[in-house]
Length: 266
Image 1 (cartoon, rainbow, N blue to C red):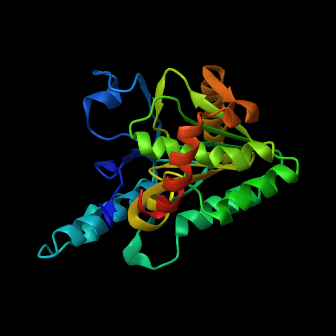
Image 2: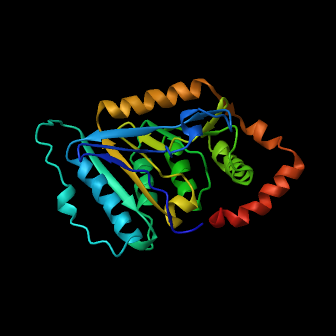
């Protein structure tokens, strides 16, 4: 389904806000097992940034229930008791906001400003050439580029297309890992300066066809926490080699070649 909301937003009394990969279903809490261990990630924020998340929710509510007249300021809470030097920016985007992909631009900026490391976790890796080029250029600058995707897929065709994209990245020296305990649904990207966590997959749908949201955090302990979580995930993941990728069954290679034509539809 195109032009749908993929946002995940919880705002509590205007004081706390949550977002990330979590939906409301048993598998997200590992109460049922569909694809092995379900690993997800998110962020809780307090302070003035909560208002940005509130606005994102109210915008979508207003679009969904247009007959409702909202007094947005009624939902604004002063968080004067919270003192913090952490800078974070609440982001939202969607097809009604214009043809350009704000989140693709944000991802490219994080990639382009990476000097030492660039770590990505995404359940789906379906990339346009411009994003592939940005990742390869980062690696060419000497950046340690690592990407984590699921080992057990929730959508087999999307998994095949994700796997097809490994080749050009592996040839450039980018390290790719598959989360072997199950399905990783975390959507995060970081360099040594900042991290973004939210609902954005690294694929065409998130960049162009869905309404998404995320939180961009600069120079704080949160960036270190995201990095630590990613490195712990690397420790239980399988690193895919270029030789292994080339040994894919011939039938799978042919299927992936033809599926590549449908990148923008998946």
